[in-house]
Image 1 (tube, rainbow, N blue to C red):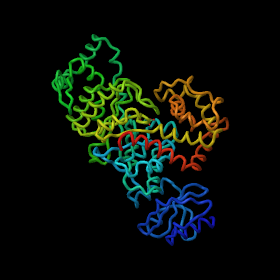
Image 2: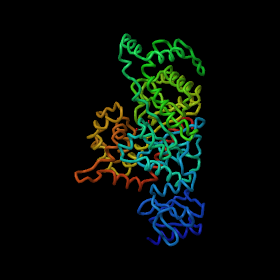
Image 3: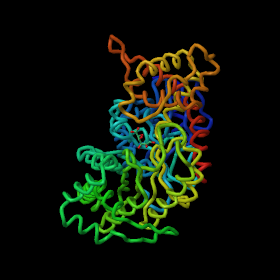
Length: 498
Ligand SMILES: O=C(O)[C@@H](O)[C@H](O)[C@H](O)C(=O)CO
């Protein structure tokens, strides 16, 4: 072990970290922690980030690492993270309930959370740092253990004590729900899209009636007694549920409501608020009418299902990584009703694909009265791509070209309306102007949806084409990445009124 490491341990032992300097060791001073007989500090050595530890006792002995002259340097392993969780409470995720705004900050790389913490610190909003869907795990080759480890170590590195969450996002299967809950995830986003019938919109009136007649009589009777031709006052809005609307909504959502109830009863009900339960009906072709939102919400209430948030499918388009597409006046009208319904039933409105929806953020902050859940992920990956464009033109050009060559394959995973013909040809763009691609919608979506293909790409010898070079660059440029996130996610917060 180097003399610099020995000097580091010495400085930690004698409380002289402020005066410690070494050419190949970076210290993260905000991480400094003392407790249970241990002094602990996050550092970066040539081998990567490490926990520098001195002291004695169970906490010290539980940390696994390389001994260095009276201390040790511990790698950021899953096992060491679990030890950190046992002794340092603020490194564990928590649930937040419905009274404070929360922001999903999906980090597909395991590198974004320090910048996210620096962005939200001091704002009236709490970060869900460990947020990934199974789709993202499959595309990046990561596990939920990796996702949670990265977030917990980041909270330690930044000395962030305000609390953060961990969201098992867009979960559809029992085994995935059990996986996330077993690991201690504190938010569960139930994706109900497979139980939502999107075919109704294409049926004739006669076909709809026929289909409705096939619904069990007791089910039809229950819905009709509760909602048929009823007018309900919600906030300053009155919703009237016509027979056509009711028949349509029963056919579209009844099965999904049963699914929501079944998952709540099996996994959430007994947890006494330890897990925030989000209902996602956004990733579906059918926009959620305010009347349908009310029916779903009231059914959940009647069945004793308590939720943290609901993500409806809004009118218009919330596509990945770009601003809102649609009639903003219509969106505002319906948003006001959706927000009133959420407030009426005591949960938060959740905005999925929340990345970069700058034109509607002020409306969201206004109508939710600042109590919302906003979900982002792709934009955080794109800020990393921006770092590549700024600092390694060759790598960016190779990634950009690979994305172009594999774009069609990626459209299987995400709905986008990208027009590749509008993306400036690479050979027409100077190195200095490469970062501008991250300001153009079509290029943003090109790089957004191909993230998994880029990170997992391998050559004929099975070697990673981009990943090693990419992660090495992001480690070297960690401050540039954090600054980019502070700027870009900070713009999200500012427009949301946070
Ligand atoms: O890519 C994913 O699967 C997730 O990030 C998903 O898109 C997420 O729920 C979201 O809406 C992020 O904006």
